[in-house]
Image (cartoon, rainbow, N blue to C red; front, side, top):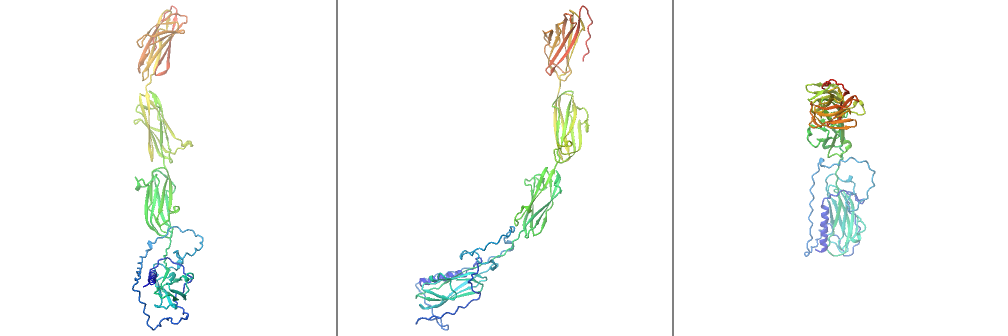
Length: 629
């Protein structure tokens, strides 16, 4: 077989491969040159004057001419294997079809029609309305019919037969015939596309070939060479299929009813939430998850001890218009202030819309509180009265009910008098005030200011006196406060100055006595005693006190007598000092002894004075000592 013969066999095999394979391309637009559905018989050929000796086609009743024996030296042309048709896929179930769940967009203005795609762009050129639903096969066969023998330069008739043996229309059917060398195209009943005929390439665009229909293209050709030649044609087409889906839009709407309806609740009381979810769309919503997230001040018994303060409730599905009521959600209020419960419903079938599928309910949790302040003196002396007071107020947001304020007094303290409105238990040393209701404190309202509860305690002995104040009310944590008073002993030193004689003669002697008595419960330390004598008295001797002599020195008209320093005079102890004087002149008539006492425990000085009458040549009886204090 010649090279040209092998080439024609190869082209014929490729044409069969393309024609027999099932097409899966999406639809193409019908060609305006498409022929009617029914097959057409070729038009009668115009007789041509053949030259003498030219061969004519054999008559119909004669046996066909024997084919020319093939060239045994030539290698056989490869035969393309027949392609296997793909197995039909299993049809998709309805619930496996992916539906677009986005909300329907607003109608957009009609777009201008797109230009027709190029011949090889693979896009839609056929309206989807013309495409069949589901799986279909398009099988387009092409057959070239030509005489087994032709005579050189004599016209012959060839026919290209295209048939659609499938179950669906073939679109954009195009037949291509590339004439072999030595074969010239003369004419055809179906004119080919202009443009490439001179190069021996014939193209027929047949448009749509319906299922079961066929198309014949008769043509006249003239062989110009004596040679074996293969006349081959190919066919291409488009096939399509479509699926139809109904797009629905399920929607979720959350409703939450809060009880109590007034968004205000006392701390410790429960708040109920009635949650419902409704599908307001036109399609089913599956695998719905309802989540309720609580603020830190709300707590459900099922999540105690969990960091995630939220609950979840699944709903298998909701059809269009269906409503699902969740069990009532009851939560406890554990903190004051604004608390919230946020409910959210989601589904993989629904585009989340926070305006409908998420809702927040708020409640103002009010709570009473107590605050106390115990005021007490830090330091007092024995046998004095300490001023105490308890200030109680409600810094919360709700009235405190059944408020009790109690004060435990120290063992060595004694209540001076029970204050108004209080009850005193002498055995327990306890004061108790009862306030039926204490409203929240408002500094701008005098009637809502803190309550002050005063009381007095006599502090008798040395020591630390601890006072404990306590306040409690319904639903309020107990408040406790303690204060201590340091009760110290005090050196209570008393001074008495007196004379042994009321009258002394000039030149005579008498004694001034100085008595120091500590009535306090603390020793008096660093006691210094100084006696100032008038100029008509001359000190001659001192007595009493620590060992050592006193110092005497004149100061102005007086003479100062300074006794030795006394280190301490204990509580309840006394000491008597004496200064013996001599009357030196009687001009002034009266002699005085003025005493000043200082000690470390008191910055103030004690002063005392005694006097005698100085006379000339007359003696009187000794004066009696005054009574001791």
